[in-house]
Amino acid sequence: MSNKQYDVIIIGAGASGLMLAFMAGQRGRKVLVLEKANKIGKKILMSGGGKCNFTNLDVESNNYITHNHPFTISALKRYTNWDFISLVCEHGIEYEERAHGRLFTLNGAKQILAMLVEECEHTKNVEIRTHSEVQSVNVWQDGQFKVQTVAGNFEAKSVVVATGGLSIPTLGGSGIGYEIAKQFGHKVFPTRAGLVPFTFSDAMKDVTVRLSGNAIDATLSNDQQSFTEALLFTHRGLSGPSSLQLSNYWEAGQSFNIDFLPQEDLAQLFKAKKNSQPKILLRTLLTEYLPKNLVLELQELLWRDQADIMIGQWSDDKLLQVASSLHQFEVKPAGTEGYRTAEVTLGGVDTTEISSKTMESQKQKGLFFVGEVLDVSGQLGGFNFQWAWASAHAASEYV
Image (cartoon, rainbow, N blue to C red; front, side):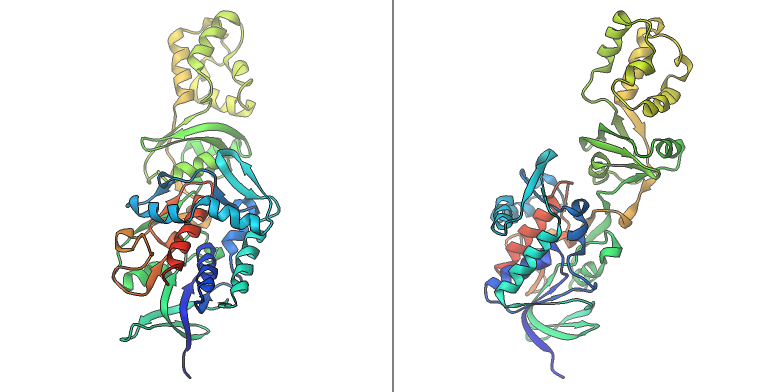
């Protein structure tokens, strides 16, 4: 039986794969999208708590982690956040702006997926197949690609790897994209989980268990980055936007600092209160700013010996020491929750071997890579989706 012929075969029906499919379809290309899962766009549907943080109002190349920063600039300039916002508006999808310029749908991520599918259908050139896990990709002498799947064999002039990363394997994350890249001689940077909660195995684990469910605005920082956002205590460790953000810049074995009250100058506050309210206890003072159970945990760790001594009787040095510790509380995670809950995969296909203009391999004509499989990872806030849209747009003009 002869293989079915297409112009373009896209491996993966996630954000970048579907975006690329409809844009290539609009150019009159005959497109086949192969998805191994039983449904398409699973990660889109669960993103942003089901509301899909589809882009950000302020997208810069420094919002991305990559070994090759200049690579991202071209694609992000040619298809901007405003281009995607206008597409969303054309489809009548209502959205809202949240903190840090993050844009979310009002009525659910399913609208973004429906929009992409509708655009694909509108072209009449896109075929999407689920339950079609790719087993191998080979190239004939005439430059045609043969893609073997569990559901049959297909041929095309161009193959696009839009397989995503290893994050959340239950939604279809796998390493096939990296395997294809290596097969064609590409370097793949080591991968690790990004935008992921921290876990602990020391005394801090007991603290986070007891504080589970509490959330505060805090600053998490190391020598690379600093993020001031919500910090959530969980029965496994630390989560919330500030933790997820810093996880992208954290390596195993490193510690980082928590500033529990970044908006206050605690040294000044303590000094002033020592004069104006000398009979107050430090825990009473701090419960005006932080949850009581968090204050009690910090008291146990930082000023247990002076817990019941009025602030007026404290030495200035001791107050300064506690103030400093609350602004720079050092923790050392045992690790992260890993790919199971990670929102993104750090590392991936080395972009120095990919054209920043076309997303085409410089080692194999007709082979393209888009989205998260590349060594481009966004910070939290819609940046990974914007990279999916922009890289797909770049490739769509050349596949």
